[in-house]
Image 1 (spheres, rainbow over the protein chains, first blue to last red):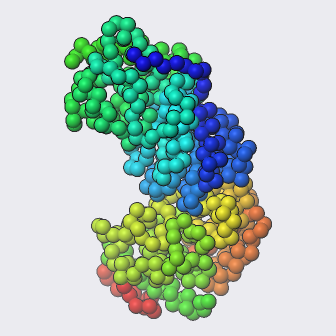
Image 2 (cartoon, rainbow over the protein chains, first blue to last red):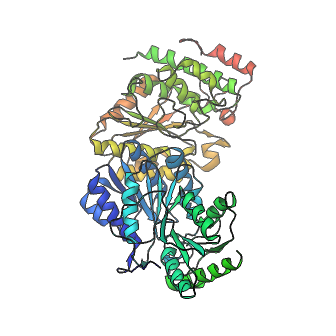
Length: 317
Length: 281
């Protein structure tokens, strides 16, 4: 199978910080707002270089969303940054009215998403945010897989005219996608072509999916691996084409089952090419304190479980 | 420049529009619309630098108006139509299926004059603050006005915005509270304990002005003082003392008419109390 090399572990939030800085350099309409999490969101470079375009909002996320909508109305391209829970669930109504229904060009930068936030525990480990953001009309939902892709996706989000939810994480993870490759919103990335089973993964689960595919190859199973960074709009064509080819699909995500990528893909396939599926996700549970790797293992969100799911779905063909 | 008499005549027609629109739709919010009619008339016919012919959503090189208490669409749509943003005849479509005059303001129906959606309370002050910040970045010297309700000020986000606007020195932001003392379940004091609203805004660092919201001289001088405050780095909050349902005796001073439509007979009774000055829609 195609070989992917980790060029050195990096956190995806740093990819966001780097992308925001580049976008800010390229376009003076780009502004950034945070709710007391400038450092956590890696916004320092932007804030230092463009202080007049950086708005500290204090611990007041609802106002941050509304103020960003106002800035967008005047033609600015605002990025609001906080932890995933606080820029989704906490301010869902503000996002719905001011950004989605209000059609304002606001980018929601959502860091520390998923269970890999780690030691802070369940209050901060958002496993429901994709469901919330997906439900909003006109909202683009992007969940990139590594540093390079998060940086590229941030730059692409700044260029896109409309609301974007950009989800990334806290821990350092393998950085393996091509540096500088432009991000295309709505386009799936087939990382490995296979014929026996399709593994569709998003975010941190993409690297795990590649590891699973390597393990499966050793057992003579040829897995196709698709990186879905844009969850909405979904590249249905790529998913359907792969399902027709392999006739077995696994979906892996660091998110709960309800409203996640798994349900989304199931819906697409059910109405076009009904295909046996298995799901790797956080089920219907809250997280808990632990290191990211402990938690991924405990909740079954790793390469081993993805490989097992692939074998299980193969048996159902 | 409009004379006080002209403003009073316009306000009388706007009040007729409000009652007739809500009666025709058999739904809507007459109470707060009638209490803020004189303020809204002053804004659109005297105070604001905003031209329907060149208006755009981004508000470039004009004043911007945001209605935070989005349920006050009857007064909003009436002043917009009377000021020339869209045909007065369109007021007859208020709250009807397919209309641009949605129950609460929408930017998705292409109605000229609407800058932002509202309805879910407590959010407009933040949007207005963001627009004010954008104008500062653009070195656009125009003002941003936002109308809030006193009941609405129970929302925590109002006070988040209250801190933000002071911290970011948005002295081009002029907020207005329609201080009618009423909300759906009763008086603001009885429902949630309003406390000293003036002292609260002062404590948040705002240039706070209290004025009579039914006296045009008082209204105009309050706005004049608010504009003169520019350069101090502080945003302005004008607390306009008003009466819910003002202008129609059986609607005045009670929360009962917050969101209730009059019957045809009640509408006829109300019309007797409000002079037709510009021709009904």
